[in-house]
Length: 271
Image 1: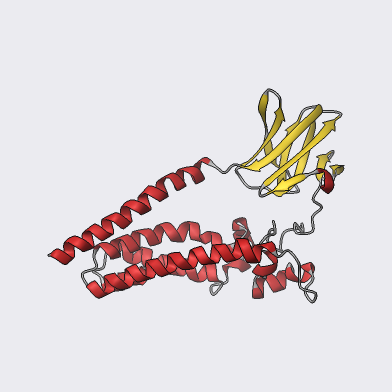
Image 2 (image 1 turned 135 degrees about the vertical axis):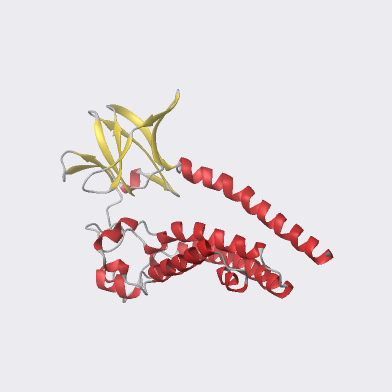
């Protein structure tokens, strides 16, 4: 859609944003090999550059829509929006309901082949096999796809005790739930790679008690401090304030933009 900018009156500031956004897209696609720079690994995945690209594109596309005087181009823009929306909905359905349910690996491709650094850089992940996995790039020191799905008690910087095993843990979506008796106050580690937004709770008859969660040093997994005693513990991904605020702003913002676009086109057609 941003290419519509080529057909409207140019703005000196948007010229810079247009060029910058497409440079970032080339970086994201791998054509500009910034992924070879070790510091870029803080992103974990190149597609996270979209966090920068999308807001820039919003300015460019909004300006382009607002300055389109050609009815044919306006129709093309609307067709692109409708097609892109349908494609997004279809791809999400395929990924999560069809492809995401297949957790088996092809017989001729071991997990170590898929996570090999050379294969990752040259070919990318096999999305069909890893779409349901909780994983990090191959350059990380841990293999999260084959990481034991157990609850662990930290007893040192690199040492731990296995305390709750798979068959005693209830997992659904981004949640983990289990009951365990702790002999002492403990720092436990969940088999979930750390992201901001994870919250842990003790569930009892009096309600939910929130636990302090951390990014466990040296393991990069979600950890929580649990007091001694028998506890029913729940870990869930609740999201962050900025995620919720973004959603709150995005839905009405998108709705208003579509209404404005149609009203403008209607008035333009009458004129």
